Image (cartoon, rainbow, N blue to C red; front, side):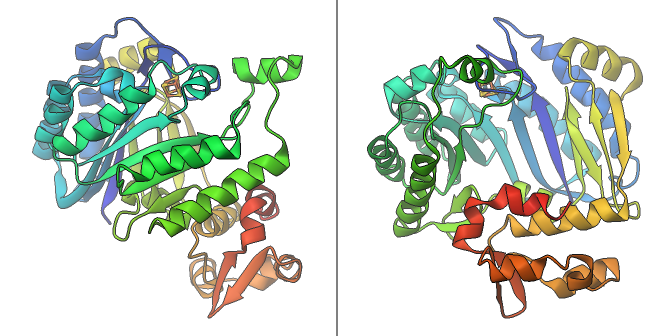
Length: 381
Ligand code: SF4
């Protein structure tokens, strides 16, 4: 089975106060050494099962801020990958870009080395919301990045939008969507702001210095996104994701569909579907320790987890349900040898309450269910 490759680049110019990703503020970063560590890790894994002799369907450079790294670093890495493994001819190769860190030349450089999809961390076009979020780019930087990316030859552009930001009104969100649609993007990822433990935003919310958007307003904003994106010709294909036909994020879809993925870099996670119910592992999170380990041993794994059948069943359900095409109970039975309704009898209640819908043998989240997805998923664990 073709697999996916994820590469984590953990450096950012500043750490945004809402962010709980494995990202570190840095004025400079050991780009060469970090790429050496990635190369060492790649060499270690690539000849082992389940990666050996399989082709790579998608590659994703995430972070952190991958666009801090120069095109030549990606050229070097992608050349190594293609020397050691086979990259599918139509592989989707994505790079996350922060508008504060790019120039037209840099974007042309990324395209020239084979990156064919850009995911731009715009978040909002409203100056006051960017300030609240602690972002260091301006709305003009965001517009420029999208325009330069097109000029550089990117035919597959995605943009992140954050909603339910303190101080945001539905009118501001509507304006953001209009501006985003003005760039005729292929894909939009929309996330409601969450207050993750150990972030400054979490502490500010607790102290009462940051007032979250009211729940009703958050729901109204999510509904507004759905309405505007669908009206603009996008297909709502996953809870947070909208795509023009043919432009769903293939890398993410592979995660949701249980495909194996190899994660390289500080804090990266991997999953192998080769064992009975799957195995996942994760890397050392601190970049310095990650590099030391990867350069010395070729691997920087810290935790390994073998999934149980029950865990695999739960994951199968919510990874499928988060996609709007949902799941077929027959596929569940084929994989696990047990009747879906028998394993999860509460599905009848979810259908009666109108949170799930059953049509032509497919079970999907209803519009109401989409708003309560986390609660519904938790009921399958
Ligand atoms: S730029 Fe992205 S990864 Fe970096 S701190 Fe901000 S939200 Fe986190």
